[in-house]
Length: 211
Image 1 (cartoon, helix red, strand yellow):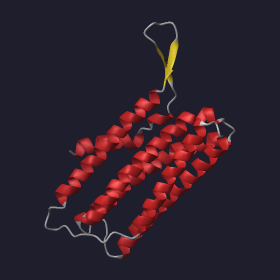
Image 2 (image 1 turned 180 degrees about the horizontal axis):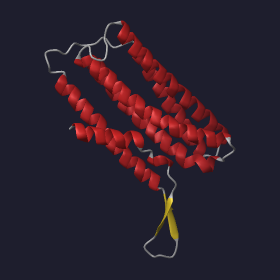
Image 3 (image 1 turned 60 degrees about the vertical axis):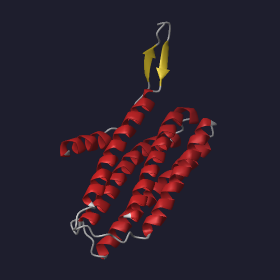
């Protein structure tokens, strides 16, 4: 299982399929080349792999919490604020996506900047939650519950950091004078990725609260 998890981690953290270029594919009649958004397919595969990775860790979480040494944690209250920040980030990415579809480059700029800012604030809040746990005496190796809290939140945070790298590339293009049509696909795929990580976090947050 460790081998499978390691392979999934390398695949999800090192691969960013939505930044690749579109590739022409000849149609069946052979009379013209069709440009298909292969990056959409790549992102779909990537999200499927990421879902499998999170599912493996969540399954391990449920199995491990049956142990006698499991001590329930008091989840830091800052997690509620962090959740609100990530929701706002996802909302602004959706606004950027809508603006790109309408050709409104100013709306794309606002949406990307706000979405990225809320995401950075979320990650800072997660680090604050770690600090609160440490101050309460719950360290990485204190008990299995704290181990999984750090593990699951770190895994989610690493995926967000990967997304922020792509966000930075897309935002730089916008501020270099690219038109909305030039970044429309990148904005759309970033938005899908943020929505995915929001759903993952809402599930993880509910899991941590309920157990």
